[in-house]
Length: 446
Image (tube, rainbow, N blue to C red; front, side, top):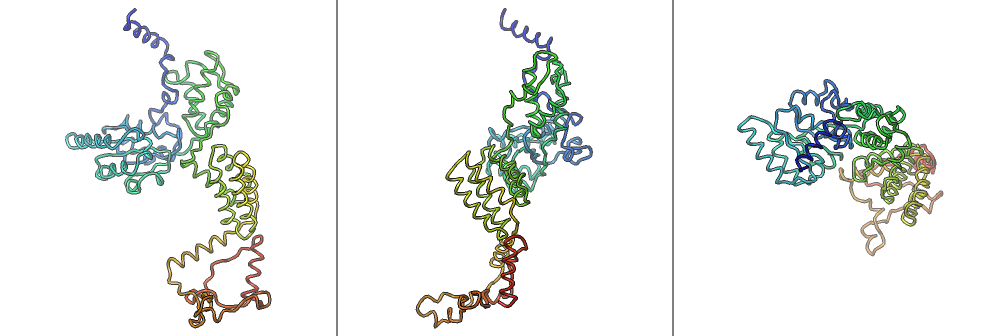
């Protein structure tokens, strides 16, 4: 049998058994072809929404699709490609360069000049384009030669030039809910043409829910897990079990990118949980960061900042403990470093809160940067050099320790700021005592 016969025989077998044609991953085969199959992202492309109407009317503007993996960015771009009358080009920022962009621009100019046809260029992972590459796009997006659709998992406000951002629409795609992922999995189980319908798999609701939870909002991951489970199932009509999922996934996969937007979201939630006096939530986000391999020194610095910014003088011991944790982390390393971090985090979360010192320094800095604050008063100036007294420096300074309670009233602020108040102690924790002491000094009988 010659080579042509071999290929013909293989093609015949594939035609007789559609399942044999499924060489592409399930997530690729099940990519929605239209809005009837597109599940989730109603806020962006639900019925009547701006982006959906623009896609359906083939009037797509330049935009950047921003969201975590598996939320539909590439799918939306392919749906645009399937309905548009424009010339559609696709680039991946990992492999494309300026020469590729210029080649598309040349073709776009011809399409517009001779055929009155727009050119849409889809750039996947646009955050991987450097500043120079992004700058090349700018004039062509601005004059309409190119309609840009960028896709990125990174926050475009961090990764995309502001000049380019000002000329595109940002479309935020969110992680899918477990219920939406279950619907996507059910579609794949039932579809006999592109999905796993031919296998007649038995996949109970609790298993589908487990896959959805494991996927953490990522449709691609959910379909990949289902496909691997189907491969383990014993033939047509087999059952997907929890034991199979445990074998496939092992430990929970962390959808945490130390350089990505999810990183900033997790750190933000961590800090806000400490500030909000929720030690359980703070420990949860600490665990997420540790499990994902976050730099423990970075975490320790965030803890120290929270101790000063959010606890402050309501419990001065918080900063002492936080700095001890910083040193302990450097000395111990992981995995032991998790213990002093947990101690500091729970202490800060459980401590009384005050941001009075943080607000005070920012108010003072604002005055210094925006006002003429005047000179340092003469009586406070340095008097430790010969001739200082002749200049009047320090001659009228009153030494507080010479007076009862080691306090005496005198003016410390420059004349231009007399009466200005920055630090306003709260009534929380130790700061309540500080507030009472300062009130006695400056308003009572000190």
